[in-house]
Image 1 (cartoon, rainbow, N blue to C red):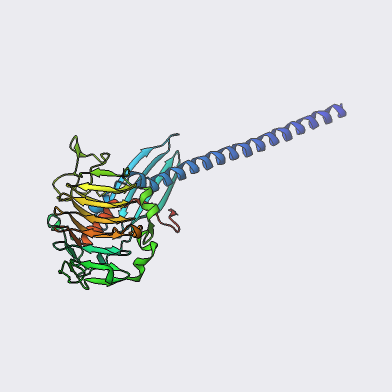
Image 2 (cartoon, rainbow, N blue to C red):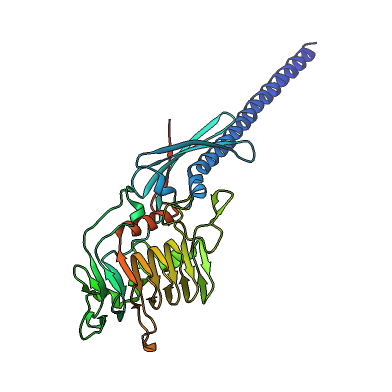
Length: 372
């Protein structure tokens, strides 16, 4: 009997130990499961927060910077992601070229906040002169190149900058700049000075490096692409009351008479391009020659791998022109015919660069988590 009692007690103790082990194991497994769930929820919330903080870059439309006041905040905007996480975000402009975006993410009981630092990818075009050339330039009798800083008449009230007088033409060797008959200048080039000796214009970098941006970065995000030997008559195009930015001849509305007034496209010509009348604005980058004829009007920046020529008929460029004149041996150089005008405008350059710049992350430490 004593032995049977001992076996019973032993069995009960064993059962108690087994049940205790099972209970502890269940507690551990349950805790790990909840921890895993919590970690998964936190990860989903973090992903949603990062999505919100970077969403402004994909929502950005060219020209937004022109209508966004310094210090102005927009949002919050919301979105539901695949899997059920929710994201919200708001953006504030902190300077002329920088923005801060805050993204909030939530999933189940988890919540995360991330701040992203964003910047406009602004090219830094040299505003020293109205016309910069690598070799020679001809300003014919009746043609004009002016370094005085002007603003388009239809842009009054936009708060445009004015830097005062600049050079008319910049070149490595100013003796290669002909004003009317080279032997007896006609006064078609004016500025402070009219001719500016600029040794940097002899190098290719002057026509390919624009501050933190380059020819490659600008052309890679061109809004419009023109085939070689294209002929274009630019003008704004509306479809259903909105500015149709897909039309290759829609170069915005410099007269500011339509909703295309803040459309400043980056236009990449894959070869020579002839602009026949019409008007446009933005940044025109040409792999070959740029010819403006029949009273064509362009406001902004023109950079040509070869020559820029304003033929007779009153063509006008307001902003800045850079002509690399790569093919010097052909004897053809940048040429401003009678009635042609190139006038320096820091206002036109500033609005063209702001209006065409995309929004990107800053290069160093572009985001940071926010802790409650």
